[in-house]
Image (cartoon, rainbow, N blue to C red; front, side, top):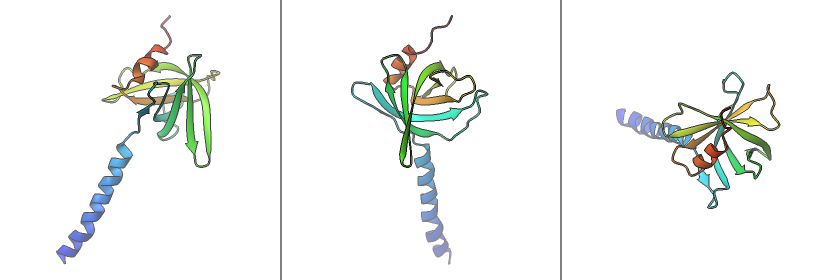
Length: 134
């Protein structure tokens, strides 16, 4: 009897563990020329509260100094132009978090929190796009 319970709960525990591990993995890829990358982003409101869950996004650097962020949702892809607004002073360990504002700027619109690994090659490029303090 105990053996039957163990054979039932064992695979179930492994399955739950695999689901948890899959959720924690954040995708990150960079093109060879570092002009495009894939990472995770989350929409937040102007008060800093999360509006949506984290989504995988494709980001391309635009020559004018912006970022073209594309997100796939079922059958369609939505793309918007964003600018780097700020960098988080205390991001999660091993991550760099950038706050993006939509172009043209909408004071009542959402902001986008872009998460990249702190050791990524795009961190330098994103830092270069930060506005200079006045």
